[in-house]
Length: 190
Image (tube, rainbow, N blue to C red; front, side, top):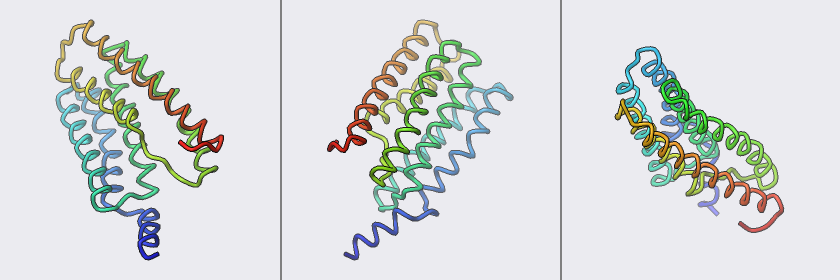
């Protein structure tokens, strides 16, 4: 009984180290955009993006390892991820027009996730975290961005290949989320 009470208290916490790290990542977004688009310094933007990625890993590790998973964190962490990814893609779009495909897919996916996520929360009362395929999309997006930033004169073929790979995985991920959320909303066990 005591364990359940402690677990419920953790879920309702607002100020936790993982949540502060997620908030820090949100604060890094304007710095990434400024570095890439205003200062025209992709390497600096890449270093800040790396810092953001490391704090993302740290926040997830700390939340799981020290039982600091919270409902706010389940929302704040993916919001920080998606806004960072969107900012990164918009920066890359200024040099690589085919990145628009990823921006469009991401916008559609996130719109679906917000609407269906709210419906699932309303029905179940639970906030669900990212699944394995969503984490793969995140890894691919960061990897693609890193390659485009580090390899300043990337060949169009390699650029298009990486963008295409990300686009395919994003579509697969949204399809899997649609299946999962539809089953949840129908009351089926997922």
